[in-house]
Image (cartoon, rainbow, N blue to C red; front, side, top):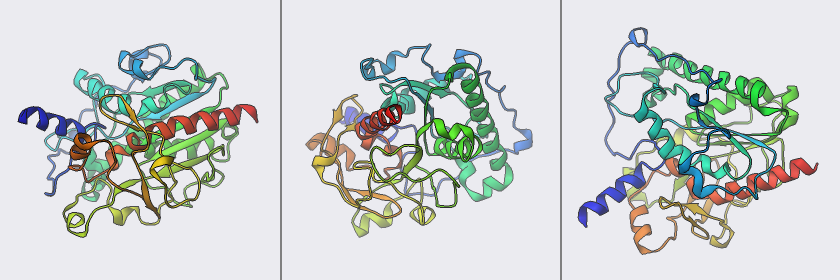
Length: 350
């Protein structure tokens, strides 16, 4: 029983494919970027280059299928950083490696992109994502920027292929988490902001990254649940006691996130707090959605939430997790799904 308990805790820590918690500084192994041999670029004309594609049904998403709710809209989703092993010296992921593909599918695709699966046609490209260490300044200046650029160029090519081959002038939701949201922000700047394609934008869900007032010229922060054509964004942190706060190690530091725009992912307006009754649902590891379990205590440049109410056992397991970055989507999974449907219906009826 003891070992089963430990396995469950480990699974919860890694459920979104991001770095598990550690109070000790992480030292990464690395190599010169010039010596790194990247895998071949994906060919997005081929279905195997897509983690999710309407023409390639995934069994792991079958629990989230709802053909009755699907609308004639597209969702382009970009998954977060999965390449986190401190011993892995590669700069970018090899999407042809089966273990990499399985990890992406079993984590972010299953527990994050699934929020949009019943909304419309979901597209999520495999891409040569940059290793987590590139976000440290010392690595960024010594190859990290090039690794990140490689990742974006894959996403860019995937989006170009999607537009030319699959979109057929349908309205679009852009969504991403963490590194994926960073690439999504750049896609919006390059293809939507002040461009003809902006008219096709239903909404952008830029989750787990930093968005400021200077990032877009023509794409607005949406502050009502049915607003379209703009973006929402947030980073989630758990309310901790002063003693626990000192020991917490965050994937995204609170200092770095200062000055960020932050949405309310439950009410989608400018309220700074919510009640448990407002919350539509937290997607847990058993594929079940738990409503009325999350309460927002405060919003400034981040969302501060209390420990979710999900029964004694689940609450005990969740109490071990202090860094909520990996749960930015799971915590508000049903809220995101319902809101995406609302914005899409509003757009289609305009």
